[in-house]
View 1 (cartoon, one colour):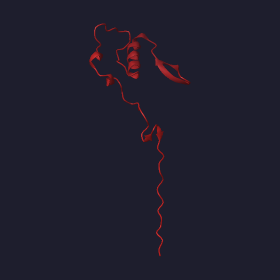
View 2 (cartoon, rainbow, N blue to C red; view 1 turned 45 degrees about the vertical axis):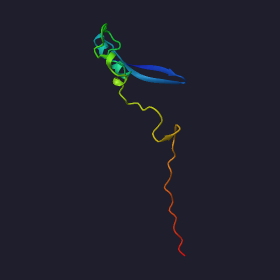
View 3 (cartoon, helix red, strand yellow; view 1 turned 90 degrees about the horizontal axis):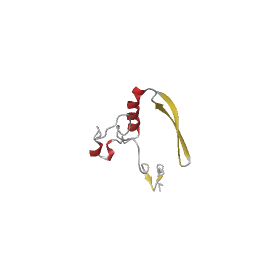
View 4 (cartoon, rainbow, N blue to C red; view 1 turned 30 degrees about the vertical axis):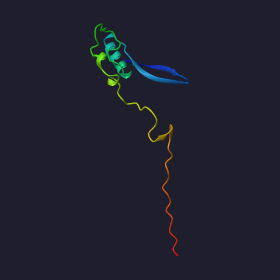
Length: 100
């Protein structure tokens, strides 16, 4: 496998990543499975082997979250209020009592 730079644009940002590319025909099957896993999809979604009847991973009967690896955080950041982080309050200063 050799590494090639993959570029993608989303709105105003440009993303770059080095992606391994299969160089021989015997590595194509494993390459396609790895790509599907990275995309959090069925490992048999695409590739040189066709499954006309049923998927070997029985994708028709599984939940949507089966292939999702759950490493991404969704929603607001922890400890935030209305999408903004809370400011931590400093330790309150102790006042000394006045002696009469």
